[in-house]
View 1 (spheres, rainbow, N blue to C red):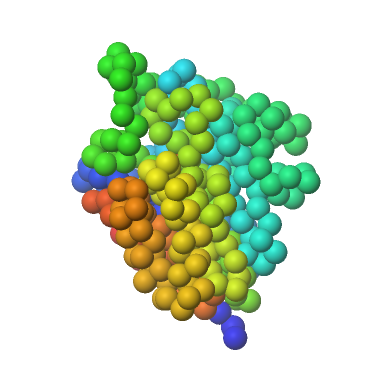
View 2 (cartoon, rainbow, N blue to C red):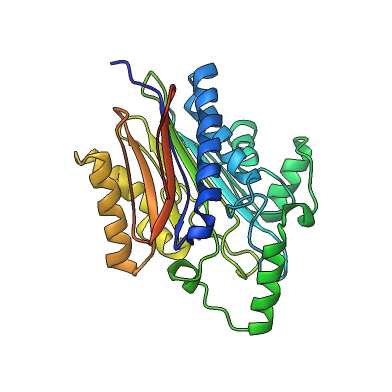
Length: 302
Ligand code: GLY
């Protein structure tokens, strides 16, 4: 069966204030356009996912790449991961520093090493060895993150989960794409949470939690409270529901329901099933989400 190539992207689920809707809409639109032109030129779902996420990592309204939160030591540590549904190959990096595009390094881990997951200094060193230009922490910051860091430092005690409830400042990005042969890829990238402990890793780079893709069923990418998403394996929960015959929309809704029911978590998930049907769900006031076919933007919603 010939499938119409499609991509769905998210720019985080949280209480996005009205003043930031336009910027989110623009970021989602441009990410979709990057993915569309990748799908058109290559019919490669992984290339589309990479192009969408790399764009969002450079667009400062999102918490990924440039625009990432600072940890409790005043450093930017980022997590990213992706998966190819054809062969279940995975590449991931966590607590990586000083790179503009963690998702690009994650893919190099997948293709150029015998491993699936590199963390910390090892991940940054690997990026440097592969010729990825290292950037100063300052280059990843937009003024507001430093201000937030200084405010939180002054405040002393920080309850991380609260950022995913009301006070969240911005969020993780992700994408899922399917090509004309029904091949699926999924990926996710994040700067994590504000004032996190150095070395903290959330759900985003963990296969099954932050993302998952299996051509037999579909692909998913998560966003929200990482410590909770890890516990319910949000992306894999979606895939299990697809396997049991739920629609893409039902699978997204039941997984987010599980996140709330089992760990009182806030977040969202995007899905494409093996036939190219899409779904998304979130339990936060807003989620920045959009989808496109090879030819047209299908929707953008904040
Ligand atoms: N979902 C992003 C994080 O918790 O790091």
